[in-house]
Length: 409
Image 1 (cartoon, helix red, strand yellow):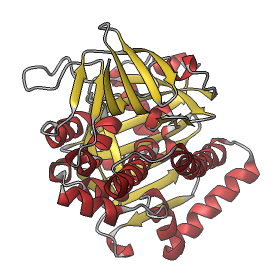
Image 2: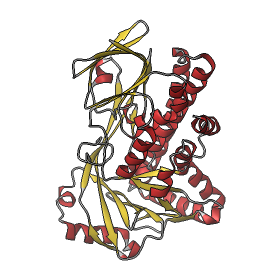
Image 3: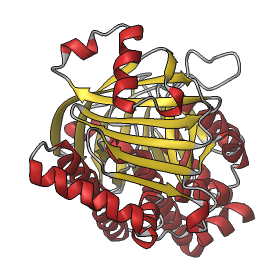
Image 4: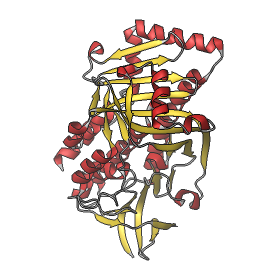
């Protein structure tokens, strides 16, 4: 069996970002293997890429963009559509909030990028690292050992690793087989996602419109807008609408923002289920990203939460390996896991509050939320606080350490 210091299970956006963030330790001798069921990325192998790198759009908070900049992945900056203005409104009510980055002395609120473009940028950033690759292979079983884990691959190969980081998006049964329990909440809703063409250019505006059936978001996405339409899973009438009728319904709900939607691209649909592990860190194994927690998309914070976790894990490993040429002890990973769990719980709580606040038809709650939106619109200092929270800037990260390490590698 081939021994490794660290095994990263999952080569999607989270796994590749972690790998890039660990570049200083890898250059110093850390022996790493990455295991990914999809084929190795290449210009001629677009169909076999990781399912993480599909055509969907991902909203990147300003802090996430700062992480990619610190890691030297400049092509992400070139591929994003920046968000300069955000409008939040409540359909059928007067509540309304408009936030402009320039008025808050901010360069932007973040940006939107296609998962495909992000995947290409990440692969270019890590393809030259001295690591072992196991593409087109899956981990079938993980067996705890006194000083690590044994990983059995579907190819028949067995390897060992002192530390395992699971970031496979929760698509496997590995955590369940290890006895790690999870909590699950079914929102009984689906997210319908598509690229849309509007009559007017988006001018880097983003919209979040809360309706009786759920939130609808429009995000700047190149020359188009990315639509995220959340609706109850039992609304068969809405789910069955053809494109023409869907455009009419959406334009009614959005009040023809950006001049109205004129054309809808291919639909993608996903059930909305929140899942979180009760113990994302056990001896010699840690789960991060969607493997540790999946969130409701209302606040757009799932991937940004994952990147905060990646940054913290990489900073801990890099610092310890630089000082002692060894991986951190279990107690250090466990302490870090508790910090990440607090971040996760705060992010989940923020999303839940939005769902409960804007999902209620109770008259007093409707009145309260509209007063709140109007108050925020009139008091920039409060709306800036909301914007900073959405940008991730209320969650401190060891960016200076990551930036120094990434550049020095």
